[in-house]
Each structure stands twice: as structure tokens, then as C-alpha cells.
Length: 132
Image (cartoon, rainbow, N blue to C red; front, top):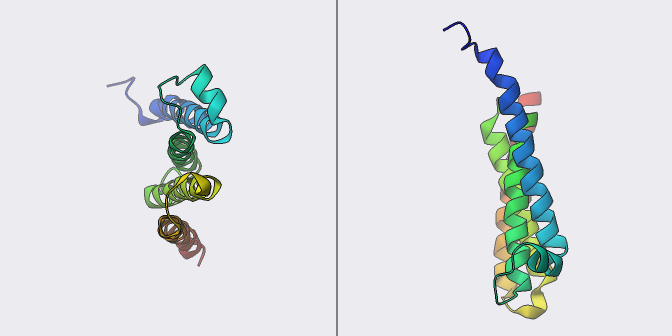
């Protein structure tokens, strides 16, 4: 088909990816950084649970980061997946550290930190291996 040139699809897909990244990052950061406001303004689902909203924010930031990284490294799905999941996992660790007085255990935080470190190390390794 004449109008089905793959080049014609790249721009709308890049715009969609960028918009998705922005939405997930904005709402994720909002939920993570100001959970009370997020709850009151957007997600009024009782009961209010600050740690749950921190986790929701962490995972949304991870999705947004994955989309943004995929836009930056369009031909490297493994790097985008590792780096984006690593960012989300790191935010999840931060939520557990931030909310340590609300429950959970130190072993949960340590385990999550190991996962985040492995994902981010894998992303760094993937990036470094392409430069050599």
C-alpha cells in the first residue's frame, strides 16, 4: 500500500510513547512524592494508605521510565526493560525505606534493593557492552 510506509508510522508512535511516558511519570511522581494530595484529588479509594500510594507511584514511575528509555534507545528492548524496571524497583526500595515505620521488614527492603541493583547493573552492563 502506498500510505503504509513504515517511516510514516514512526512519528505517531514516538509521540504516543512520549505522551505515555509523561503521563506515567507525572502521576507516578505525584503519587510517590505527595500521596495525600494524590489520594484526595485523584484516587480517593478508602482507606488512605500512604505506603500503597508510594508503591503505586514507584511502579508508575517504572512504567514511565521504561517508555522514556525505549524512546531514547529505540532498538534496544533489553536495555529499556532492564533500566526501566530498575528505576521502578529503585523507587520501590525508596518507598520501603521512607515507610519503614509503617511496617514491613528490613529483609523486604534488602531483597528489593538486591533486585533493583541487579536490574540496574544489567542495564549498565548492556550499555557498556555495546561501547566496547
